[in-house]
Length: 461
Image (cartoon, rainbow, N blue to C red; front, top):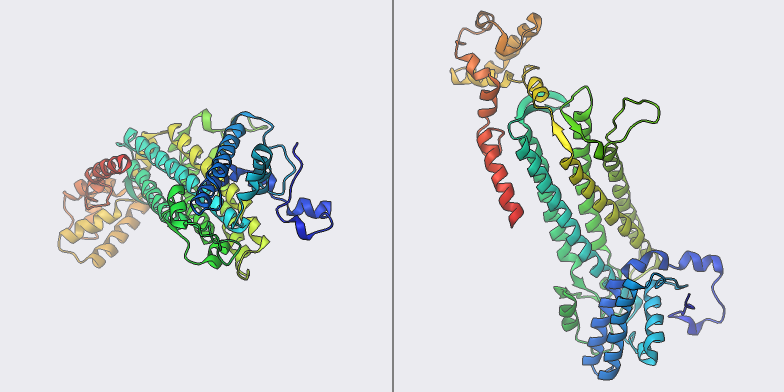
């Protein structure tokens, strides 16, 4: 274990209290920023060299030392065993041990404030890209499932009451669209993450004549921050990211809730394989959708992180305050949670089957073709509001006779409205009901087939 060094000890004559030191230190969790911080430090060393602060030999030693640290971290299981305040002091002490006094020059003109903000943004950029890939993978799994059961018809619901028949693929594509918006939000959040604060110093900027734009290009940033005070104290990018994935978790939670319901014996539409289910310690017959229940539950965890970040930042004066150290664990857990939920959701879609007979039976009952009867009357010249009222009376009569509309004798319908003819039964059939929703975005087989093709094209972009 390496002895710790402090980056700020010259003004102090006593050591921090042990309890406070433990309270203050962040190495146990911010070590996740190691690679991002080293990348930022290499680019900064190059910038110092171009500015004439470092000789070429010193710059080569620093860059070589940092590069070696990256390599060592991948092969040495004890690499991170240290008593360090944070990952930034850890890297600096490792570098000084490795290359000597040249390592003490790396921090020239730099503060931990702009260093941390830069490493945090580098790390988050990579994570956003990984999450976007996982969202895309889930979309692909949804489309695969939709195509595998493209003939299945099921009830659509409002107020959790049977409303109108839809294709199962149409239900799948609703979640595809939600996830499409999630990818757009992630891309937009990425743009605001991709601004480099390095060179802002502690709060006022830096007196070192470093070319910030060139350093930014080396690190892949699109631009540099325009105000040093804002740059070191800004966590909007973190709040926006967590907000974006909080909406993503809303969508995953709704998806989980739907499948949980459809897996129940009361619905019986979907069966999950053993790979994504668990059993009961008491009841041998149980097969529980725990994978989905955990996704639904973890959504609240991410929502809490979003509220927590907002609460942390709301009363902070400019510029940096130690309160902002609380952003790390919040974001780390958010990223871990979202990535795991996306992965599990994709696995669920690979391990479910649809009972097409059960869904078709459910889609054929409950008077879900009532709107078709009203539309049929409109085509006969009856005003819709009148047709709606007439249809309601016919539904009431069907309920009394315990018939579905398509099984109700014609004379019963004609006793309410003489405009109804034999052709009404064609209009009330399940296939006609589905086929009639033929406009863009509808559930007709033609429109759903087109939507599936568009989804495939989108995934290939």
